[in-house]
Length: 316
Image (tube, rainbow, N blue to C red; front, side):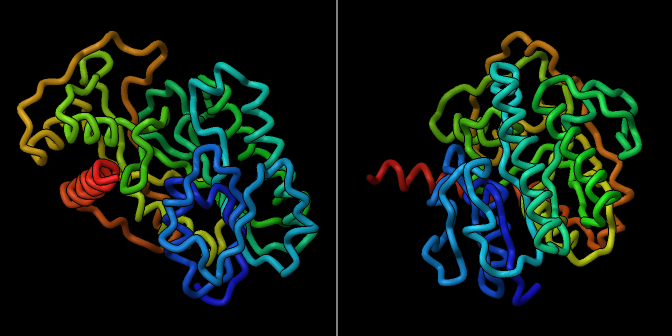
C-alpha cells in the first residue's frame, strides 16, 4: 500500500503502533489516540514527517475540522479493551467503544472513505463451546466489552447496507508480541509470564492451567488489517492461528526458553473465565494471505523485546 491517506485510531497502542510502523514510510498517517493506554514510546519516530498525531479521545475530536485531506482507509483500534473495566463501568465502555465507532462511521460516509477496518474480538463468542468457532456462530458475549464489540459489528453491517460503506471486522483471538503491555487486563498471559520470569518471580496461573487459548502473533494481525483494505470483502473474519495450547504448555515453553526452574503459583479460577478457545480460520483465505507460523520463534522474539525493555528501564 502506497500514497494513501490513512486514519489509525489507537495508533499508539500495542497493535495500532505495529500497523503505523508498517505503513508510515509510504503513506500519510493520522493517529488519533488519547494516550489512555497507548504510549509514545511505541513508535520508533513519533515525529515522522508522514505522521499527524491527534492526542484526544475520539469522542472529543471534531473530525471535520482536523481531517483536511481525503481519507482512503480507517483502521479503528481505539477501545476500552479490558473486560474487568467494562464490567466496572459499562456506560463508559459503551461511550468509548460504541458511540465513538458510530461517530467514525458517520464521518466515513460523509467523506467518502473507501473502507473501514474494525478491530473486533473473540469475546463476542462468550462461552460458546462449538469449537472451532466459525464466524457464523451466534454472538454470546459475557461482558459489556464483548457486547460493545458485537454492537459495533452490527453498526458496521448496517452502514454497509444503508450507505455502502465497505468494512471488514477482524475478530482477534489472543494476540501477543513485542510492545504488549504486561499490565494489560486483556489477553496478556504471555507478557505476564515473561515479565515475571525475567524478574525471577513466580507467575500466577488461574485455575488448573488446562484451559486452552488460540494465540496469534501481532505481525499476522498487521497483515490481516492491511490485506483487508485491498480485498473487496465485507463482513467479519476470525484472525487466529487455528491451533490451541494450554496455559500449562505455554508456561513450559516460556520457562524453557528463559532457562528458569520457577514453578507457577496456582490461584482459584477467575469467575466466568472461558475454559477453551479455538478459531475456525478457513475464511482467512478470503484475504489472500498465509499466516506466518513459527510459534517458538515468535515467543523468542517477544521474550527478547521484554528483556531489552527491562534492561533499558534498569539502566535509567
